[in-house]
Length: 138
Length: 109
Image (tube, rainbow over all chains, first blue to last red):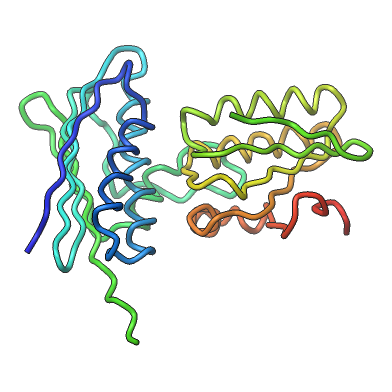
């Protein structure tokens, strides 16, 4: 059994805060999701959507977002109208602690179990999947 | 989003609420660099009301740490939330930015 939530932002004028407000609204309706899973997905979500906005900072970008919550996984799918993403998702090295940038992709990889990227019909399509943690035994 | 609270000597506490992300990161950098430029080079960032931080916010903290140290000071953090602590640990930044229990005593060694 799964539930899907869908929204979209258009930047400008929307910002990462608008996207994250959408994300927050989901978890208020799904309080049973483990805290660790929610924090991980929230962080990966912000890294992905911030990256989409930043890669298109000189123009505009529309990004649709879908989050599917099922019994065993959380899946975020985005489709954006921006420039082609030219780095392979799995080539990101963890920067040293004093680096100020370059952490987005490594964080996404650490916090999710699978990342896919595809360029299709002039759009970038990402999916981030995280397997849900089991509920703590009582 | 951020306000400054000058304390004893050259210490300043930076406080804010909400998210530390690409929207607020530039303001954090500016707030801290202005404080350091005015002589407040020992900075404490009170994270107790910051519910969320991503790599943009983390970059602002690290950039500000460098600014403070270049001026002969330092930057310390206090009361990170669980999510903020998670990001610090995953990025190994917890090794260079140790958390303190209270912003007011972050420089009491």
